[in-house]
Amino acid sequence: LLDRPADFIYALTTDGTVDWATPAVERALGYDVAELDGTNAFETVHPDDREAVFDTFERVVDDPGLEPTVSGRIEHTEGSWQCVRLTFRNCLDDPAIGAVRANVRDGTEREDCLQELDRYRTLVQTAGDAMYALDAEGYIEMVNASHVEWSGYSESELVGTHVSEFLPADAIE
Image (cartoon, rainbow, N blue to C red; front, side, top):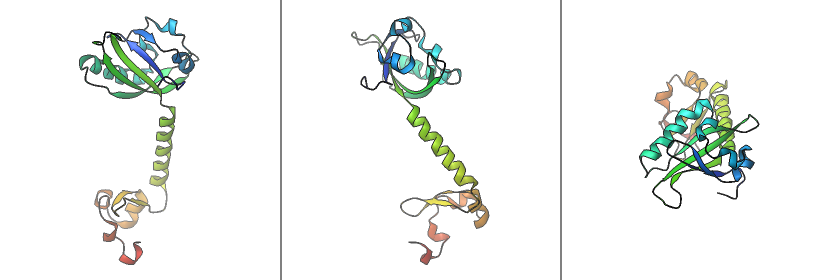
């Protein structure tokens, strides 16, 4: 975790105050470690993500057995937003740590993949040609609106049905 420049760790008190941070936070977000000490880590979380991130953190404070991961955006000192994945772990009872550990990983690549997947879904759903996707056994997993219109069946009637119910046997490979 520490060898990746965009990954860093916060040690947080139960109210989210930064007790300690790895030096990698400077490479990732531009913050000097000393300037973060004593600040609330959630002040740099994007307002649209803050509630979900803080709620996840609070669950870990209340239930030490949890180790959930949540996506969010953290503000870079230059004003941009860095997509991250935060994994919280309650280490309050560990005398060597005595804090909630937040592992922060760069989530940009994941977010880019999700955006690309959304663009692909939109392309397929809005295509003028009838399109469908099958699983390995030949069951329909997805149909687009053109396929629904062409077939005369609803999406719910098609999805989960074996393709042999709609296509002649010689058309199935």
